[in-house]
Length: 282
Ligand SMILES: [Zn+2]
Image (cartoon, rainbow, N blue to C red; front, side, top):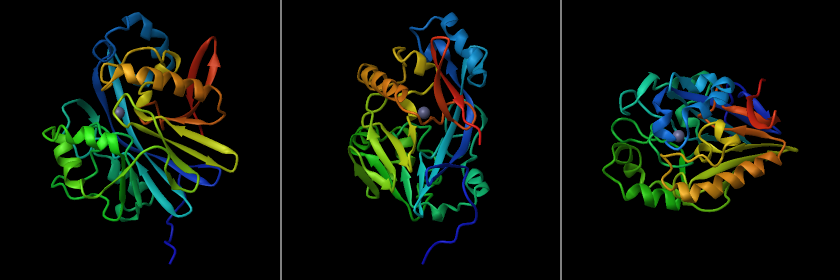
C-alpha cells in the first residue's frame, strides 16, 4: 500500500523532492581557532558575501539536515545537533529538527533512510533520543564503513556513546557509490572525517551536489586551500576538497551544505574573479 503524502516538500530536482530541515544555529568558535593559518583580514570579502556566518570574529554555524524524497523513499541526510544542551557551544537555537520535520508534514516513522555524511557531533544528534533509543523507528541508518570504525575507536565521546554506539547493530555500512533511492547516489569524499560521504541527486536532466563538511564554509569554495583545524585529516581533505570544488565548477547544478547561509541550497558562479555561492530561491 502506498503511503499517503500530507504535502509536497520544498524544491524539485528533476522528479526528486528536496527540503532543508533546520536543527540549530550558534557561534562555534573564533575564526582564528578554526582556521589558524588565515589572517583575519582575509575573511573580510567573505564577511561581506556571507554576513549570516559571522558574529564579530566568531563563526556563526547554522546546522541543517535535508529531507529528500524519490519514488516514495524518504531520506533524511544527517540528524543535526540533537536535543538542547548536549553540545558545549554558544547556541542561539537548538533542538529544532522534530518541529522542522513536522512542519514539512513528515513524521519520524515516515523516514525510510537516515544517511549520515559523517559522525561529528553536529551531524548525528537526533540519531537517538536521550536514552539512546533510535529516533527514527523504521529507518535504515546508512554510514560509511570507515566513518563508523573511526567513531567506535572513540566510544567515550559523549555523542558517540549516545548517538552511535546504541546503533552498532543497526547501521548499514557502505562504501563507494550507493543508490539510496532512484537518482540519489552517495559519493566518497574522505579527509574531514574518515569515510566522509557526499550525495548527488541526478534526475530528469537536473542535479544537486550535497557536499557536507568537505566544504563547511562557503568561503572555502573560493579558497579551498585554507586549512580547517577541525578536519580529522587536513592533509587528506586538501585534495578531496580541491577536486570537489573543481568538479562543482563544471556542473550546472545546486550546491548544498547545511552550514551555508539560509537554506544551504544554492548555486556557485564566478563573480569578479571569485567563486561565489548564492542561495537558490523557490
Ligand atoms: Zn558539520
